[in-house]
Image (cartoon, rainbow, N blue to C red):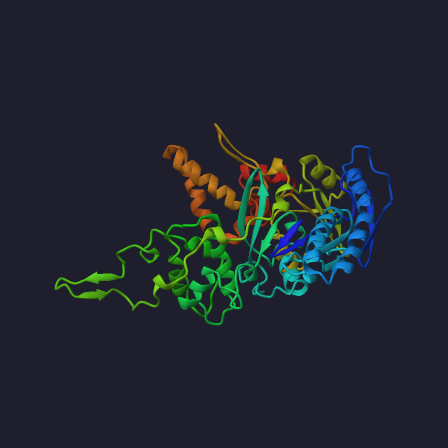
Length: 468
């Protein structure tokens, strides 16, 4: 299940990955019927229980749909029925090759309305879907290769009891890859029609936007930083390493966002670094005059931010097999499933963040008819500190690797971490934050490098994930 802003999206599989069971669904109004097609499932297949629940709920859905129609004149009664309808639909949706979008807003007409996309295309990017299907056009298309980050959105997911927020480039992120995540766009945090979010207000009042095309990307980068740390340090420029601005200049953007820092003078300290008194006691200002009055900004209140959707905390991930017109997308959840798929499709391409493969397909004429996502395989997402150093799984993102290296540099003696320090310095110059948040060491780095350029340790990691 994916959530976009206030919209819940179910990304569904056309085939049961463990046993190859095919499912078909028909939609007529609010009537749903499901029939088994093809081979019989194996006895242990979890799809059997899912299908049984779906068939049992089919009649209930028809009844609820009729009730919604009868109650439509009574908004309060319709809301109660619609909540049941959406809950039942959420259970049923995951058993058909259909992308169903029950919109959950405060109005009955939008709550029960559905956007149905038959057989989601495995080649569709998150950005294309946001702009053309959901009409959330605040997220911009710039370079299309993750270089300008005008398309930045925030992905959130729940894993091992922790909610993680990450800024990503929607122009490269496949729609299939965000199943089970919440997607927040610039429309979802505030608007001039209702109320601007403090991030939006400060970049505007600090004169940080001219043409405005790059502004949503900067806003979402800062918003993600604040969701991860309510009081970031004054050195927050790293969050914008992937964002480009071609007309405003970066200073007003950074100065406006610096007001969120509790350590900087613009964050509310009594003394300002811009204020200097000469020897005769006359106050002078070092540098240009003040561009804005930070004391007039609306304060940031973290308690007013949208909470992570409760349904995504309890809804387990399932293996995906999305068959598009030209490309098939598979998402195994174990190493055994990955190896089975790799053996079945030896010419398939393994993908983690799509930051390299996406560029190859868009701009280099490459075509891969079978993609297998390794991002949810636990065995490839582990890191372990050993006597010999640090062992890193091929699907570990560069951001996670960077965090682990920083921890080791801070906690271990210097003579044991000089190589780690060198890697940290190199990672700082590698791509932008949005790319590093999703790209894996066995994907973006190894996939884009000739085998002869790889050191033995990195090569071993690549061979482990099968990308070579």
